[in-house]
Length: 175
Image (tube, rainbow, N blue to C red):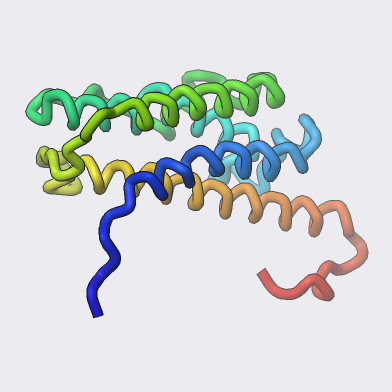
């Protein structure tokens, strides 16, 4: 059986719909609940959304543009974990950050759709991941949304558990 062909348009459509999914899922939380963390090593929903805003501004679209225009160009370093502390994610306005992510993603999708004939095979060697092609980066960008939607859903489950005490949530099923 042949593997399906690369489907850039499908990935781009998923990026567009992913913004709506992040918005809808995140806004299940109140602004206070969006700041809640189950432990110090976990991110709150607000921190996840702030991370997505920064990734949209400083990672995926910039790196993809660089790879398509000048594959040999060095990428600026990023520090997603450090940004959470340095940029005071927990002090940010939740609704504003959600709106900012949605607007930034819309701009990214418009840019992607404006590309006349991108070379999805354009490649460079990433310092830790090895060879990386433009198509790899586009796919990873779409997958990144799914990872963080899962993370937000987990926080919603944990919030339900927290708020249901002393009652149990087992009837919902296992996580």
